[in-house]
Length: 312
Image (cartoon, rainbow, N blue to C red; front, top):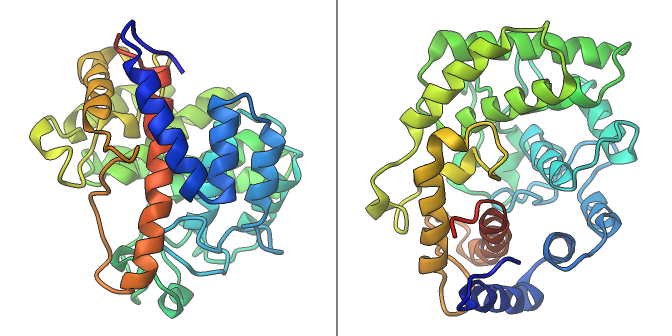
C-alpha cells in the first residue's frame, strides 16, 4: 500500500486488514492477500472454484445479495470480474472454459440477452432487486459484460465466439439507440464491453471511436456530483468506471476521481469498514451475514482504488 508522509493510509490499511482477517470469506481473504500482501492468484482461483457449478456457471451466493445455489448469469458475471482482477489472459483456463460452456448452453438465455434474474432466486434469501417476476424488461446487465468476456477469451473458430460477436454488436446498438441510460450498473457493463473489445483488438466489430465518445459523455452524465449524498445514499461514484490512472476515462474525470480517494480515506469507520448504503427488506438474518460480506468486498475495492488512483 502507498502512504503519505504521515502514514495515514498505513493506519487505514491496518484497520481494514484486521477486519478482513476476522470476518471475510475465504475467497475475499485470498483476494486481499493477492492484492495487498503478495499472495498468489492460485489461492484466489481455488476459492473461486468453490462457487462454480457442474454446468460451468456460478451461483452459491458469490454475489452476496442472492443466495441461490443455481448457476445464474449475474453470479457468473461476478466470477468474470474476479478473474479480471487477477489479470489472467489464458482463455484455456478451466474456470474460463466452464463459463464459456455455461454461456453456450442457452440456459437463462432468450436469444438476445441473458436473464438478469432467474425464477429460482425466489426460493432462497435475496435482495428485493434480485426477485424474479415474469415479464421482466430485458436488460444488458450483465449481457454486455458477458459478450465482451466471450469475445476476449473464446476460440475465434468456436460457435460461442460467433455468438459473442453478435451480442457485442447488438449490445452496442442498444446503447447507441438508447443513450443516455439511467442505470449506472448497465453503463458500467458497457464500459467493460468497451474494455474487453479493446483488449481483444476486434475493431472491425463496431466503431470503437464512436463507442468511446458516447461512453465518455454517458459516464459524465451518470456520475453523482452531489458529494453530500455519497456516504448516505446508493449513488454513482467514479470508481464504478475507473480503477486506475491508466484507465481510458480517468483523465477526463480526474478531479472527481481523485476526490473519491479523499472521500474513502475520510469515511472509513473505526472498525476498518465503510458504510453499506443499501439493505434488504426481507430475510433480515441472512442480510446481516450478506452485509458483512459486502463490507469485506467494499474494503477490498476501496483500498484497491486508493492504491491505483492515489490523489496524493
